[in-house]
Image (cartoon, rainbow, N blue to C red; front, side, top):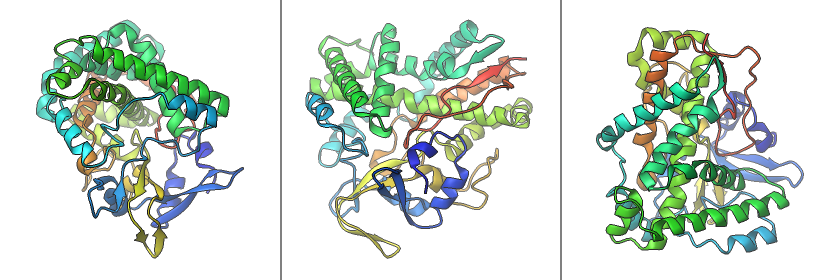
Length: 397
């Protein structure tokens, strides 16, 4: 395969994902210069098994290296990162620690659709405000809408000041690039310093009487330590808006790149939930996720020794079905893997879906003539995990 980082800059990766599915285990190229490769799982059943691995005794997969970069950071960056005191409370956690932390978070986070319903009015208010103040005749929707909506929601939930949003977004984008991109050594050092600054911000947030309504305050009241509450904030401030932003951007791109899709939703607004679900399957906000083999694992006669980092390719697996490479506003026969599975199923899935559905419903009502601008050329950042156009230029007729 071609270099996966360079490849990821293209929006439509259908051909690459088809190529991955030709074998249950592929060895994808990460770096042409060094020849570094990584085993990739792309069949639905294999990716599902990898994502559902809880790290319990007897499981094939663990999560401990999920949030470590694929490359080896330079020595100076590693020295800076040694100042990070965050605990593996979410994605990188394994038993016995993770089940306790997950239970604590579930006790305060709106992780079910029934919980999210109480935030519907807040979300719709933010959507309306953003559209009122920032949508003109021609506008770029990533910065001015898709990124801003989930960021405001997660700031409210965590208890961070709304005015800190711009800085948190910079830190968050930097963390995504540090882990899933391929920064040069000098950039690694800069991003590592920013990660430490981000961590210290979260620690201060937890230490200084967060608002009583916030998840942070409620976690502290439930008995988690200050460091653990800060670690939750450190993870959720990234996960709570990066993935939802990508979901909204991918959804709008797919609906507008073929105007008949937008028109169909105008004619049948009841299809909004299906449009969100199909976007999540066809072009998920996170296309691949890391796992590590807990013991020797054999897949299709190929041995993956214990301690092997593998790429569970969510996007390729989501299309591992008849007609899977077609985007269609229909209910699919099985659930996509975009939000993971098992004990690590994304706790913010219901909230992300609520935000995307609300955004689409309001936009359909107010911008019937929405279309991509004629000179718009979609492009993504070079990133193996997170995938969405970095800009989305539209006109409102």
